[in-house]
Amino acid sequence: MIGRGDFFSFDDVKWAKLFDDKLNGTARCIRLAAPLMRQRRWGRIINVLGGARASRAGAVPVGLNNAAFSN
Picture: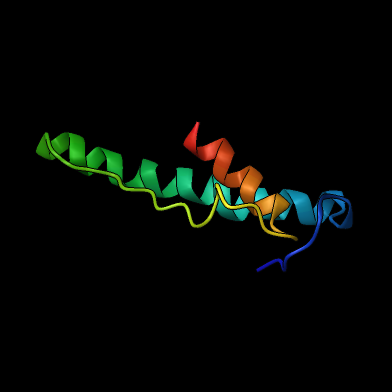
């Protein structure tokens, strides 16, 4: 888990890990669940984004991930 920080405190390695863990991790979970839902011809994916609309100091990287996934 990468801690909070502002946009300028994350180097490329931390930035890539944050996106890999959160954004790509969510996409991987969906790809695992989708074939079962298609097979059953039913299913729902509910993605809960915590606080993406409420601006908080130090939450820029998390907010960007949430925005990327919800759009």
